[in-house]
Length: 233
Image 1 (cartoon, helix red, strand yellow):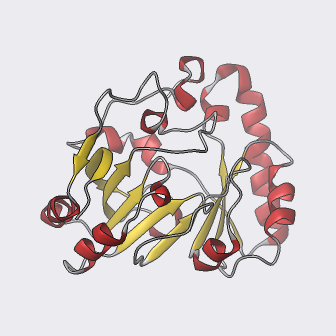
Image 2 (spheres, rainbow, N blue to C red):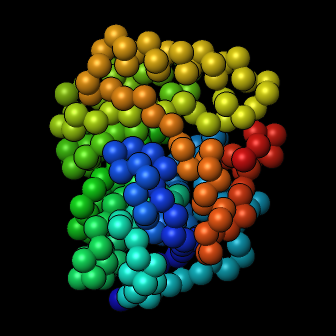
């Protein structure tokens, strides 16, 4: 089995989406070609925050550690996990009867066997139709008041799921200079869900409120959003 470059791995709970609150073991991998300016995992790609030597871990070891944690689900995330061949790690997890979830932007083909696909599209790397077809839920990041309409137009007719989460872009809620803009985004999400109903759902990253990711053994220190200290963490 080929080792995978792992940024961090820890036992926590899923803080968003349809599996909110479930005991989860997160395996966060290095590398992301998209590099969003508001990325909350910039330690996986930002040159000022990436370790000189990446930890390379055998898939069987990752799977055994996840199994030993007693988690309900395993979440493969990043960075962008789909840039890696995940066949070995997904096989190692599934033979241990662990449900395998992936969080991806959808711009790359999925190589592996997944029980749940969360697709969060990004403008700088638009999702493939084949990956959208595999998505069990969509997570749209709402950056401004016009974001929802833009994504609805871009994704129209390209996905099957009836679970479309609208998440406020996190830095809008944590940067004092942008707080007013953040309130407008929250209001727009609320209005949209009330006006349109299914498949749209108002979302939030509840694990950040609890700060639960930082409580787990194996998690790395927080990196500023997008690697930029002015945006907070």
